[in-house]
Length: 132
Image (tube, rainbow, N blue to C red; front, side, top):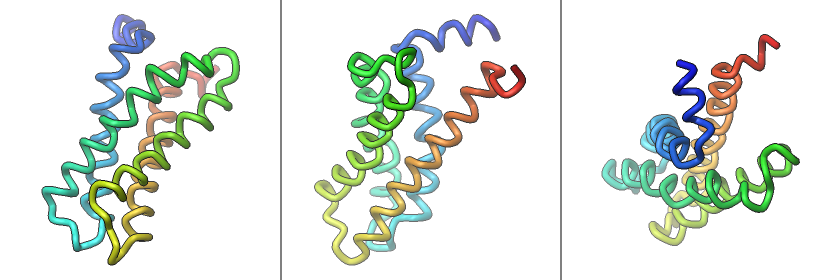
Protein backbone atom coordinates (compact mmCIF):
# COMPACT_ATOMS: atom_id res chain seq x y z
CA UNK A 1 0.00 0.00 0.00
CA UNK A 2 2.80 2.43 0.79
CA UNK A 3 4.19 1.97 -2.75
CA UNK A 4 0.80 2.95 -4.15
CA UNK A 5 0.69 6.02 -1.89
CA UNK A 6 4.17 7.01 -3.05
CA UNK A 7 3.14 6.62 -6.69
CA UNK A 8 0.14 8.90 -6.08
CA UNK A 9 2.65 11.71 -5.52
CA UNK A 10 3.56 11.49 -9.23
CA UNK A 11 1.13 13.83 -11.06
CA UNK A 12 1.03 11.61 -14.17
CA UNK A 13 0.16 8.51 -12.15
CA UNK A 14 -2.36 10.48 -10.12
CA UNK A 15 -3.91 11.76 -13.36
CA UNK A 16 -4.91 8.23 -14.39
CA UNK A 17 -6.04 7.01 -10.99
CA UNK A 18 -7.85 10.25 -10.16
CA UNK A 19 -9.57 10.37 -13.54
CA UNK A 20 -11.01 6.87 -13.10
CA UNK A 21 -12.05 7.68 -9.54
CA UNK A 22 -13.68 10.94 -10.65
CA UNK A 23 -15.68 9.52 -13.55
CA UNK A 24 -16.85 6.64 -11.35
CA UNK A 25 -18.52 9.27 -9.14
CA UNK A 26 -19.63 11.86 -11.70
CA UNK A 27 -21.03 9.59 -14.43
CA UNK A 28 -23.78 7.98 -12.31
CA UNK A 29 -24.82 11.41 -11.01
CA UNK A 30 -25.04 12.74 -14.57
CA UNK A 31 -26.97 9.67 -15.71
CA UNK A 32 -29.61 10.36 -13.06
CA UNK A 33 -29.48 14.15 -12.88
CA UNK A 34 -29.42 15.34 -16.47
CA UNK A 35 -32.78 16.19 -18.00
CA UNK A 36 -34.73 13.62 -20.04
CA UNK A 37 -33.94 15.42 -23.31
CA UNK A 38 -30.49 13.78 -23.22
CA UNK A 39 -30.28 10.13 -24.27
CA UNK A 40 -28.33 7.77 -22.02
CA UNK A 41 -25.46 7.67 -24.52
CA UNK A 42 -25.03 11.44 -24.12
CA UNK A 43 -25.15 11.17 -20.34
CA UNK A 44 -22.43 8.52 -20.36
CA UNK A 45 -20.38 10.54 -22.84
CA UNK A 46 -20.70 13.62 -20.63
CA UNK A 47 -19.47 11.67 -17.61
CA UNK A 48 -16.30 10.60 -19.39
CA UNK A 49 -15.67 13.54 -21.73
CA UNK A 50 -16.21 16.53 -19.43
CA UNK A 51 -13.75 15.22 -16.87
CA UNK A 52 -11.27 14.35 -19.61
CA UNK A 53 -11.28 18.02 -20.63
CA UNK A 54 -10.81 19.59 -17.20
CA UNK A 55 -8.97 17.01 -15.09
CA UNK A 56 -5.56 17.45 -16.76
CA UNK A 57 -5.81 21.17 -16.05
CA UNK A 58 -6.62 20.53 -12.40
CA UNK A 59 -3.87 17.95 -11.89
CA UNK A 60 -1.07 19.05 -14.21
CA UNK A 61 -1.45 22.73 -15.15
CA UNK A 62 -2.95 24.65 -12.23
CA UNK A 63 -0.40 23.32 -9.68
CA UNK A 64 2.29 24.96 -11.81
CA UNK A 65 0.75 28.36 -11.07
CA UNK A 66 -0.58 27.66 -7.57
CA UNK A 67 1.73 25.11 -5.91
CA UNK A 68 -0.11 22.78 -3.57
CA UNK A 69 2.40 23.11 -0.76
CA UNK A 70 2.39 26.93 -0.75
CA UNK A 71 -1.30 27.85 -0.72
CA UNK A 72 -3.58 24.84 -0.91
CA UNK A 73 -6.84 26.78 -0.36
CA UNK A 74 -6.05 29.08 -3.29
CA UNK A 75 -5.20 26.06 -5.47
CA UNK A 76 -8.53 24.46 -4.52
CA UNK A 77 -10.45 27.63 -5.30
CA UNK A 78 -8.90 27.98 -8.75
CA UNK A 79 -8.89 24.28 -9.64
CA UNK A 80 -12.46 23.63 -8.58
CA UNK A 81 -13.69 26.78 -10.31
CA UNK A 82 -12.06 25.60 -13.53
CA UNK A 83 -13.59 22.14 -13.11
CA UNK A 84 -17.09 23.23 -12.10
CA UNK A 85 -17.64 26.17 -14.40
CA UNK A 86 -15.50 24.79 -17.22
CA UNK A 87 -17.56 21.61 -17.39
CA UNK A 88 -20.82 23.56 -17.27
CA UNK A 89 -19.60 25.72 -20.16
CA UNK A 90 -18.40 22.72 -22.18
CA UNK A 91 -21.70 20.91 -21.63
CA UNK A 92 -23.65 23.97 -22.72
CA UNK A 93 -21.54 24.52 -25.85
CA UNK A 94 -21.66 20.86 -26.88
CA UNK A 95 -25.29 20.00 -26.13
CA UNK A 96 -27.22 23.30 -25.93
CA UNK A 97 -29.58 22.21 -23.14
CA UNK A 98 -32.36 24.75 -23.66
CA UNK A 99 -35.42 22.96 -22.27
CA UNK A 100 -34.08 22.34 -18.79
CA UNK A 101 -30.94 24.46 -18.76
CA UNK A 102 -30.72 24.98 -15.00
CA UNK A 103 -31.38 21.33 -14.21
CA UNK A 104 -28.55 20.27 -16.51
CA UNK A 105 -26.15 22.87 -15.14
CA UNK A 106 -27.04 21.84 -11.58
CA UNK A 107 -26.42 18.18 -12.45
CA UNK A 108 -22.99 18.95 -13.90
CA UNK A 109 -22.13 21.18 -10.94
CA UNK A 110 -23.36 18.63 -8.37
CA UNK A 111 -21.45 15.81 -10.05
CA UNK A 112 -18.28 17.88 -9.78
CA UNK A 113 -18.97 18.82 -6.19
CA UNK A 114 -19.58 15.18 -5.23
CA UNK A 115 -16.30 14.04 -6.80
CA UNK A 116 -14.48 16.92 -5.10
CA UNK A 117 -15.83 16.04 -1.64
CA UNK A 118 -15.35 12.30 -2.02
CA UNK A 119 -11.90 12.84 -3.49
CA UNK A 120 -10.85 14.96 -0.51
CA UNK A 121 -12.22 12.40 1.91
CA UNK A 122 -10.42 9.57 0.10
CA UNK A 123 -7.17 11.54 0.04
CA UNK A 124 -7.35 12.31 3.76
CA UNK A 125 -8.31 8.72 4.57
CA UNK A 126 -5.41 7.32 2.54
CA UNK A 127 -2.90 9.60 4.18
CA UNK A 128 -4.36 9.32 7.69
CA UNK A 129 -4.83 13.05 8.20
CA UNK A 130 -8.00 12.46 10.21
CA UNK A 131 -6.03 10.51 12.81
CA UNK A 132 -2.98 12.74 13.25
